[in-house]
Image (cartoon, rainbow, N blue to C red):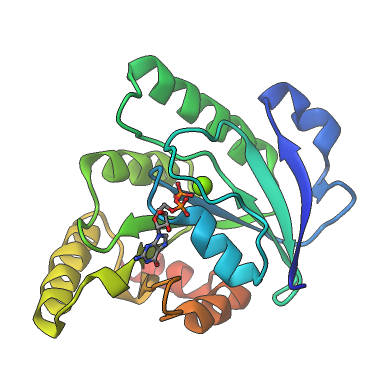
Length: 212
Ligand SMILES: Nc1nc2c(ncn2[C@@H]2O[C@H](COP(=O)(O)OP(=O)(O)O)[C@@H](O)[C@H]2O)c(=O)[nH]1
Ligand SMILES: [Mg+2]
């Protein structure tokens, strides 16, 4: 097994007991947060990366209200599985709750290295995704972008078109295509490349920010 469940944070009031300094449950490895809209394929990707059926794959969007922590043995880091945002029925209050909760976690976690934002390769970044990206950027969290379900883009020209559009949108937000990977958990495209990227740390983004 390449991964193991560590802990669940159900509420920000539990932060003090879960985190001591930069330790989560006594473990000090760097944290990588996964975040994305409900149904984007986050649980499926997590299971593909960690090589185990750890996260529940659900067709009921919006069920997650907790942060789950997993130890990813292959790269010796801890994955924080953040709650999904922006499912159909979520109103203003729900979105507010999401940002308050995620904000409290981000501020508390001294060893958070970066957040991986999952985006649906068929649609590119939606307005809700852009809101979440802006929110994380405002909290100074280094970001990396993963486009999911690329097996659903059937032709070469469709792939090229989607890629061009989505990467242009991210560039408008200040993120260059070297911070993007296109993956499929179904046919395992990009899974090894993503593993290598997350193992390597945040160097690419630091350089890019200095250049801009
Ligand atoms: N075709 C395809 N479907 C996927 C892929 N990843 C996830 N899915 C499907 O997308 C739906 C939502 O996946 P899930 O991992 O539960 O999304 P989450 O809500 O973001 O955790 C499920 O029906 C998955 O089987 C993928 O790489 N390719
Ligand atoms: Mg899920």
